[in-house]
Every structure is written in structure tokens, then in C-alpha cells.
Image 1: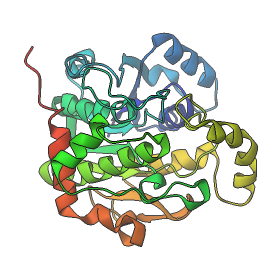
Image 2: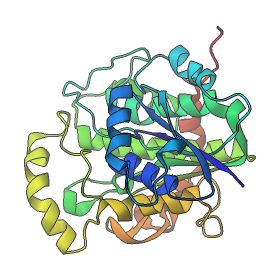
Image 3: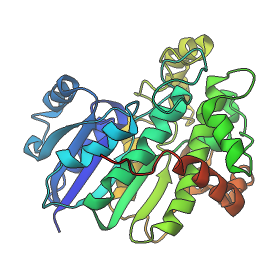
Length: 318
């Protein structure tokens, strides 16, 4: 079978390494490199051109800005080939971003972290539905932060059970702003949302998959990350690699690739949240098996998160 993939955040880090890996597979027919800048996409393609086994003729740039309006995001399907169905989607773009204020912004009037990680991607999935093959594998980039990472001083987020609670969190209607706490929550909201989405869309297979503690990315060195995190990351990352708390870029990518290529199918049912069993690397498991991840099996929370986010995914009228 000829596989057609779509990867967001494809011009750097885990996204680009995923593109590299997919482009090496004989079964891959095409990869849509979905990112904000054609220049960055071209530079990214140049960086892997000539790498043994990589066929760059399989790569095609598609513009996508997770901060754009719903109307703009829903137009993306028109930029794809009419006679081809996508067999795998990697929703990788995101991170902590550059927002320091914690004020709702943008077309959806939500916190920037929620927009770039979550809302832009759930809108993209809805926009792509007419272009998705039956059984299409959808992988959302999760994080162990959603159940807490003690060594990085990220506590387990507290998640509510009503759609109003999630709407308030998305819009920033609460005192104080801790970007790491909000980042943990947005990854948690995604795990809940896609668990319910999977039940309502059984013709597709969706997994929320953390790439683990991965060095070689810029997720924790952007302006929105507290200064002490930005300063300590370049210093402690090599140490964390050495003691097995973090792994390299290729190892993080491998967790995505296993999900995209069906190697997780027997172990995890659609809608699962897959991440490290201990810490942020090593063996993976369904996070609902862990005490700190049991809340992600709560169907009340799943339905509440889904209802809150569905407000943003209603197809616009053009």
C-alpha cells in the first residue's frame, strides 16, 4: 500500500526527524510537510537532502499556522490532492510558545499555549476528515507533563469535570499564570478530548503519544518558558541524557513512527494516551494504568473536554 502522511511542525526537531524517517520507507508515497513558512520548509528539505535513503521527491510543503482563524485552517484541505487519501497524520507542532502574559488572544480568544498545541490541531483534524482514508492513523504529540514530571518540578494538573471548567481554562479566566502548568493542562485536555473523539469516530485510529523527554528540540527554550527553565535546559540536558532521564531525538521520533506505522495497534486501542511508564523515557504504557494518569480514563472528564473544544471545531460556512 502507498502511504500518504501529513506532519505538522515538520521543519525542525521531532517533526523534521519524523519526515526523514518516513521518507526513507519504500511504502511512503508522499509526505505533506505542514508548517508556517515555505522558506523554512525548503531549508529543512535541504538539510536532509542527500541523507542516505531519504527521497525528498516525496515531500510537499503545505502552509499551516495553528494560530490562524478557524476559517483559514479549514481551507487547508483545498491545498491537498483531490484524488489522494491521507493514511497517517502527525500533529506535532506546538510547545510552550512565546507568550509571557497569559492573556487570551487570537481569533478564538484563548491562551496561546492552548491555541498552538491544541485548538489549531483539533480544527485541522476536522478540516481534514474528507481527505482521511478509513483506518487513518492520527497521532497527537502528548507529554508526560500531563500526569506530572517530578524531576522537572511539574506537578500533576488538576482537571475538572464540566465543559464550563474547560472553557474557563482555555480562555484564561483564573488568577495567576504558570506556563508550565498550562502546558501540562493543554496536553491533558488533548488526551481527554481524543479519547472521546475516538469513540465518536471509530473509522479512524487516534493515539496521543508522548515523544518522551527528548533532547535536541526547542520546546523548553522559547520566550514563554520561565527564565530558570530556559537557563538550565542547555546545562542539564546532557546530564539528564547520561542518567537516562532524557533520550535523543531519534528515540523520541521512534515513538511517533511506531504509532504511525501500526506497531502500537495490538498494545493500545484507539483513544489511548501513550507515554513513559516511569519518568520520561524507557518503556511506554497506557497512562491510565498509572495512578497519576487514571483521570484520563474518566469518561465524565473526557466528555466535558470534548464538549468544550467542540465549540471551536464546528465547520464554518464559506
